[in-house]
View (tube, rainbow, N blue to C red):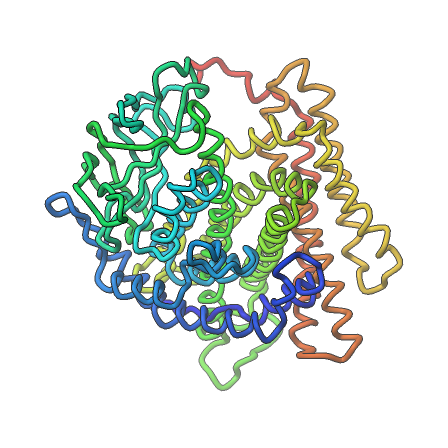
Length: 591
């Protein structure tokens, strides 16, 4: 069975040596000194390794089952959920006015990585609830906030988001779910939603569904869509639970992975709901959930890669196979451990350099969100909006790739369920699909985000990279970092220029290159993260502080990424500049 050891040392390095979080001036960050974050991360790590991780295989093998309209979660999930609630982990960054602890989103993200690595399917129950909390907090009336938020913060009630229907996924303009207004101000919601994570389960006394539906007078397409609060049980004026609402689970989807989470078909048969936000402006309210969810899914991508990597390293050190080509390194044994072989090292270095770079990028994204929310920083808001499709798309694509790479280290044993590597790969796979498939993320990046606010934010990103390169041009410790970073940034700028020059004449030229652009952007982001980490590690070495081996390994891992992965930006640029002609050359009937 796989094991999980929380990467608290690496998280502390990012928080305090790379980001210097407590010195940034963000309100609330002054409390995040080393002792405080160490205490939080240590306790979260214990919950992850001792409570959640042992249930990961249980959830995978048992799955959820539908019995007389009630979904039964895997054995032990109820006790783990109670422990999460009791420890206050569901309320970490929520508003204190509604029972939350008010801690920064950055710290919540660090804790969230541990929970996802330990048990991704389990963590989705509270993760979706946090999204519902955020949407109601941002768009709800005072009465709605008072009614729902304290219960969502505590996870006495959980939440969902209902978008997809059998005939429409991304194209929500095709939606058929209807909302009929009633005299008392409520609406009757009728329709069917599919792929609803945590749509029905036995972990909470009520489930608050946020449902997109079309109300009369909204017109065609997405302009007519509104968002509604539809509770499983109606809530009485005194806050107690009333009658069961007309919403039921018709089926649990049989999935490739995340078996421990109940992914449901939800039927709304005149269920009573209340408008959340403005009428016919549901997409704006839903995107409060979607943007948060996309960042969370990006985290899922690398968190699964992280736990898979941890176990692959342990296996490579223990498994004896063959001899090192330079001479036996385990002369007293029948063979050398796998880790002596260069191709195994390449595989593990690919994983290590991605996971640590992705963690740094995600922490930076969380920091930008904190700056936006806590300081009304418009530049931070614009930058994280630009980076959201990169975080979601690139980190989940590569996260799955690295989970498969970890599985490969095991050889045939990686294909056997008892070793657990299959589950990591299967669970990671969904992250590339839900909350907007990665092709949609790439289209969003190129079609909307690049030109947002006149291109101000992408130009700001280029300036940020240029500034770092200029400030550290003469830093001998960053030799091997600055030039690859500059080359990658120039490739990214050239790709953006190609879209500007050719996309207006033929939009296919831009869209055919959008996926490559998302990955090109991702490599530049990780290159910047690795340059920052290498600088911090060298400064620590120069000061003679801490564990020298940790810092030396950090720099060596960064050099690997810059040498072996940053050159991919040139290949992505070449594909982008080849245009759409070869992509669109075949008629549909020729496929």
